[in-house]
Length: 373
Image 1 (tube, rainbow, N blue to C red):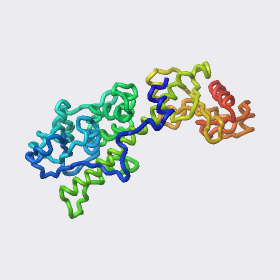
Image 2: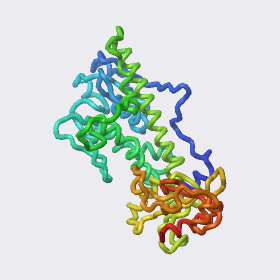
Image 3: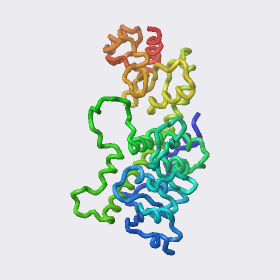
């Protein structure tokens, strides 16, 4: 069933008002202190009421840039001053430290991951070692998401988005920063990918041929990195709240109702179209669905005809669990209707992964017949 939040969101999109919408152009008012900052300077009485978050100076990566952005979204560290230094005396006096210092101690808001013996993971079935961004997200992610959704932190939608954003966005940043390959292989990659977020953040580092290597210019570059990483993080949260979560609720309802469609329980009908593939796999696994769904029916929004799509064997596979019958593939219109004995057929793809019919009844008849052939 829909959660209260999902139902309300679908009926009133304007209700969803994000607190951290970037300005155009995006300009974040971070206060960055140079690497020459002294302990006396950061302890100045003029800064008493301002929280201070430290990270290292020098070359930067996506994880500390994103970590600095996220921690400033929390109540505890809202609009905190970012201090970039490796001076241990300065770091010791700061309210929080990310990606430097060799200490992971959430009770003291220390979130480094470089020290020997560090093996912290996100949990909930995820086993990738965390970066500083992952540590901040693990401890503050629910608060950040709850503020975005404008609901209580214990709301079930908060937990769902907390896991979904980690899976689709955060885990890759953790893995890349920790040098974890995406695939187990002894072969070199077939192509170079310098377009992911971690790579794009890295490009903000000062070029070695740039004559100005000052701390001021480096801090300005880090500010740009924070803005990029932060805007994409919020985009991910926003997508999951506005699109992913309502779609999951729709698929959940339709999956539960599949027994009303056909006694086999292997045919699911979407009562309104939404992105369904990944949700179906996850919900089948979560609910131990057996037998698995073989065909999904939905109305094409443009032609108003109906589609019958064979479910893939896995989210990243092209092969279908049960392709539409070989004798139908490549046929169209009257020829297909004659071969199948079902009126109104429009096409079946050569691979058998999808077909069409003019009506819902015709598409359902195709799916039922395909289960028996």
